[in-house]
Length: 262
Image (cartoon, rainbow, N blue to C red; front, top):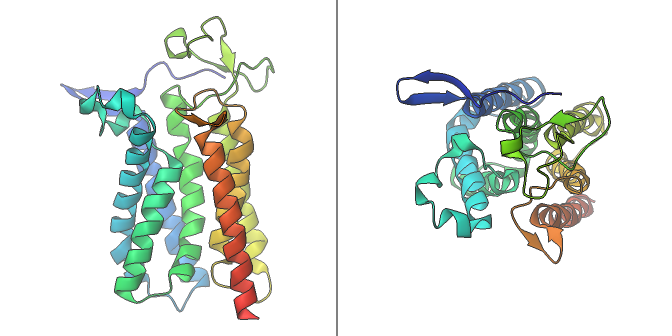
């Protein structure tokens, strides 16, 4: 598997359109289409106009959260490169930060609109995981989010020397962890849509917390293979720690939902 020769799709004078931006746009549009389909097909009591009202705010909050989280994790670098803080076309969007931004804005909007947060979170979960699956390919175009050196012919991804981390300059092929995560995300969507959704008397919030648990479990194990963690705590990548925390609390919330209903 080869890496793209350039991260730029097209240059128009001094303005460049990057593949990363195009992929992120495609991910957002795909997520919106999935959310709209799920809402109209399986949640007929939902007012789709409310979804259209809150979507722009949630999307912007997620993008802002994803970038700010990434910047805070590498504050030493960005404090010396202030002009790059909002250069999202270079990459550097944290999914965990995006989830946090989207959830916070979602809770606030649910209070303002007087709607059931968990029901809408269930609907959004389907679109979010599909958006994540597509968005990961932006990492491919930026030659980032790859893993340790790989020697398996079918899997190995060639990384140009200028993109290889310090200490790995003499290795040519690496694990395409962005692809592993994308495939896992598609698997998560399949489980949510074909299994969990069809559980008899499924409770509101089940899809949402199941999404958080399933995604985080996959991210936890994939993170073992990555070598680009921007910050470690206690010898572990922050992404692994956050994933564990999400699984822990999501499991508790899921248990409380069913205990309360009974």
